[in-house]
Length: 352
Image 1: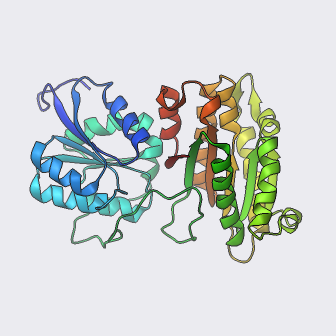
Image 2 (image 1 turned 120 degrees about the vertical axis):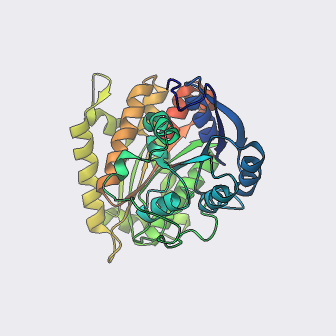
């Protein structure tokens, strides 16, 4: 972004995000533009209101799910205290109602976290010009003409990032999720994924596991320990398990994923699993380690491409997806640029 007649040589920015790795990603992305200067990083909603009132930044990047005070209420208070500050939401929440309320609360822009890597700087430029920006994948909704009086409240309390170790009840406002978990301790990781899979099965959903052979074998006794009849679930095709390396071999060519083969493989699996789900519960929970294997093999770009293809599944199918990455076997760990790009392709990121 080049300074124009309407923009100062330096634009002051406050970043409000409680998940530290993603906050680092936001700051590093903003740092690519010399005009943008991050003057404060805040993790707490109430603190954000105080810091904005004190520092009066020109731009605020704001998450929806924050401790003590959710981002919607933060935006409302900032609009009254510092009306000249521009507000740009960067959130995992993709519900049209949430987006509409965020804009009605005083924000000029809304970027989905999964799209922040490619849309953030564009959104910043548009918002600073006083124009509205909404992530491209939300383009099917009409968010024009929103105001505080027109929009019902859908966030009356703090809405935290959803834990990947639980499957939410299916509701009309429940967004499809593509979360990622980075782990350094294998036992804690296995317990977390087991809970993710077990909760889905107990709710009547079906699950798909695409994991390393050792992890696939270790999930089964853990799930049995939760009182689940895994034998019956396998027979009913409510529990489908694939070796991650074998799955990669079906759609990877010349070091790159073939989109058609990827979407065909997992689309068919999701259809099969959904048909086996009990009653009206057709949601499918998917755990995968294929992208982790690619990064561990030194093919980080392919891992990111696979994550982007996975996002396409969340747009077409009723799925909750959890990806797993072992920090001990990936290059650069949490301090790498690849780590930040991986986080940007997910609706939520967690570590154990």
